[in-house]
Length: 90
Image (cartoon, rainbow, N blue to C red; front, side, top):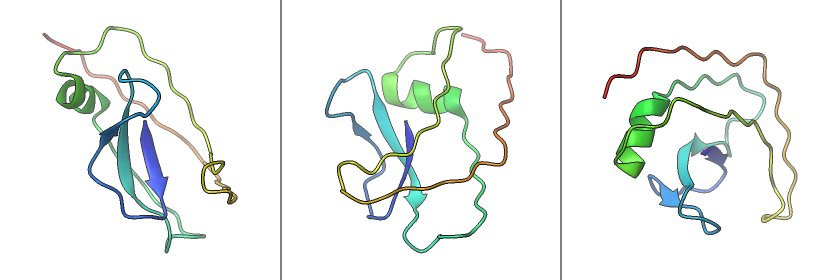
């Protein structure tokens, strides 16, 4: 999971619900309201770095907004998401 948070958070951590999920902060969003932001990640590299193995050939993409733990509100506007694929070699 890639996340934005208004609080400064560490490089990454394991989900409190399952060890099969890693939380990777992209940065703080506290001062970025109403600004266009671009993020670029190498998902395969991140997966290998956090789990120590290459991912399987299948993937799922979820885009979510969540503020229930902070009792706040979240709102986002996404213009596009582009995924590029390179051949994964073991």
